[in-house]
Amino acid sequence: MRHDEIRTQLLLSLEGRTLKNVLIIPPDFTRFHSNGGYITNVYYHALCGMGCRVDILPALGTHEPVTREQAAAMFGDIPFEQFIPHNWRTDVVKLGEIPAAYLEEVTEGLWHEPVSVEINRRVMEEKYDLILSIGQVVPHEVVGMANHAKNLFVGVGGSGMINASHMVGAVYGMERMMGRDRTPVRMLFDYALEHFLKDRPVLFVLTVTTAPGGEIHTHGLFIGDTRRTFEAAVAQAQEENINFVDRGIKKCVVYLDPSEFKSTWLGNKAVYRTRMAIADGGELIVLAPGVTRFGEDLAVDKLIRKYGYRGRLNTLEQFHHPENQDLRDNMGAAAHLIHGSSDGRFSITYAVKDISKEEIEGVGFQAADYGKMAAVYNPDTLHIGWNTMPNGEQIYFIPNPALGLWINPEKFDAGHNYSKHQNT
Image (cartoon, rainbow, N blue to C red):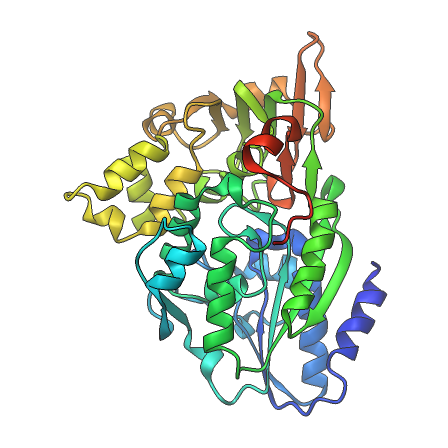
């Protein structure tokens, strides 16, 4: 879709509305390729032109606030002062709980506790005539397909839902969910939306995009206030963002753009999105020139350094150990540790510039020097997909893992009953 086509649809979505105060919830910089920046810019100027007061609350989740430089790069000429940082620990109000019985039902008996539903207090302020929730629908390791209600209950949600939803997904199994719609975690978000936000004026603005060569291509724009809007976006994202490989990948090389990926918390999308395509005994090399830490904040960074990416069973053992209250208090971090491990099925090597070999190995990865590794696997000359190196070695290259999901159907169709368009 061209920008003029997108703009026309956005302006049509405002027609006939009497608006004084509008809250926009766009993706943060880690979703730069969502095209949410352009969409937010169009809405902002159109609404200001209608005489509206516009507040912008980026869906940070647990990520760092958008910087002035990032805001300019992604959102254009919107004044930086319009962006409100979301603090997932302090800026939220509790709306209620999702009952334990419902959790037991949707997780097939794997989860037995209620989940607290919290959201940024601004979402509940009666002054807003319209809440625009903007984001990209793409395969996701925690929920199956990203966005829609997740943008609200995680993007501007609180610790209860963030932690529990991540852990529920980890316990249920990411490979049972990635690329699908009606997963247990998605059903949690659906429940919360139906029971706690049904009277709020939320309009979802969803994109399906790819970014070959770093240039954003918007394949679909879906605007509406019903679940059907999300389902239509899911169907197209399954077409555009799921990549089937013809055989298991023995060596996969993934590049992490340093402007987008500065921690393994984000960089481990290289692990999540490729694990269903990498062969047993294979190798994942993560070229991560911008990764300088493990967690997005100091508390999570400390937990990752303490417990490491050491496999699902090890993490669950640590999680249930009576002395490890710090891990139980941050279930999102525990889930992340599970997601970030290959469980010994393939090796994971991080090639970095500014973290020591000892630190990388201390969390359970193999370590390599970025300069040396990039000289062999130059991200500027490799093309997406299969490459034959000068020595005859075959590798599979992915320039941005956040924009897709890679699957070897030969291995996973039987074991996980995977269907490209499974929505039930």
